[in-house]
Amino acid sequence: MVPTAEAVVPADLGGVTALVIDVLRASTTIITALANGCLAIVPVADPLDARRRAGERWGDGVLVAGERHGEPIPGFDLSNSPLEFRTAHVRGKIVFFTTSNGTRALLAARAAEAIGVAALVNVTAAAAWAAGGGRDVVILCAGSRGARSLEDWACAGLAVDRILATVPTALLTEAARDALDTGRRYVTDVGRLKRDAPWARRLIAAGRSADVDACLRLDTTSLVPRYVPSVDKIVGDLP
Image 1: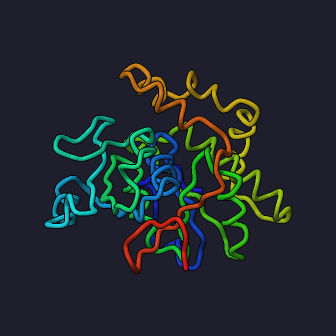
Image 2: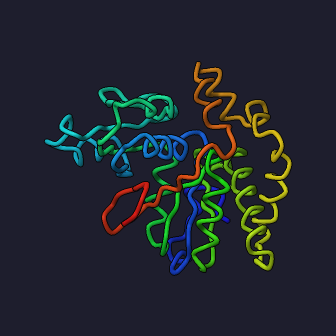
């Protein structure tokens, strides 16, 4: 269990299955995009890199999306709102995507054997996918600016709870047990995170309450996006 993107140690990820969580909002946005027919998401480090990678293809089946400090990036096609990725605008498109925390966590996870994207909206399916890999599972929370995010930690705890339901003999680290305790406090009402999570409150104050509502929903999809570093894409289905 890793609380923030900054705490990831790539050397510890060899041979493991990683679940990357950024509930508010990158993980939820990625899941939503792929559920709505987006061909692939390419996680990139920063806005300049996103523009460079999109290059001449930008506008021809390619979109550039992301945020910094929760705000849209000037000149980008989309921000980091899952609501923007529900439309036909993303169908059949490749999206170069950069966010303050979520894409950094994904890039930090590249050394893992398998990498899934998890959020509250797919936590049961993501946990089942991770447990089914037959490897040790490391849950990587994006956090916020180097600090642990309550919504990510609670989601991680719910993932641990569901992994235990599948693999009752799984051995938990101290951090995993702590996350499990946190997750179980919200299992019957993840909507309480609107009040309890500082980043949720900040997004609401910035006029993004609808985004928060979209992210704080439990098990609305069984889609588990997979990040495949060898092709540098997050995809919804693997051949």
